[in-house]
Length: 142
Image 1 (cartoon, helix red, strand yellow):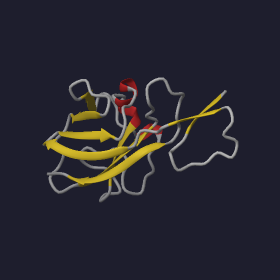
Image 2 (cartoon, one colour; image 1 turned 45 degrees about the vertical axis):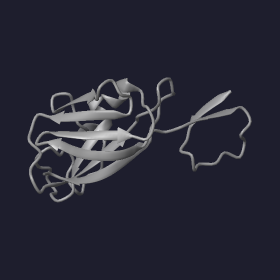
Image 3 (cartoon, one colour; image 1 turned 90 degrees about the vertical axis):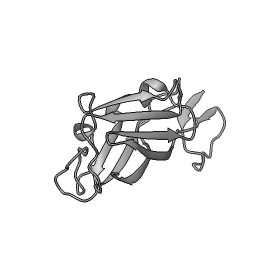
């Protein structure tokens, strides 16, 4: 039996012997404090992947050279070399939830700065590796 990770809208002509697993998607982002944002997924995720900093990017949507909490600038694509790192952000499950996480940055989120959170590689617990994205959201520092 083959196992594939697919979004609910993707079709598979040969549905025999195929298990389609859901892909968690970002549904909410809220700034909690000057250095924290809270994110929520539509379904429970593998907590190990949800708390892995290198699965996240904060893109600066205003500046070519990233400022504040951003790693890529506005004209740069997300890639493994410009993801967030453990030395830059701490990601924790909120109250043991597998859906909601708090990102605490080592720096203050500049007021008025525009950023885009990009998330990739997050799966449900027990799913095979996933190479796609889990959504993105734009926010302005408060």
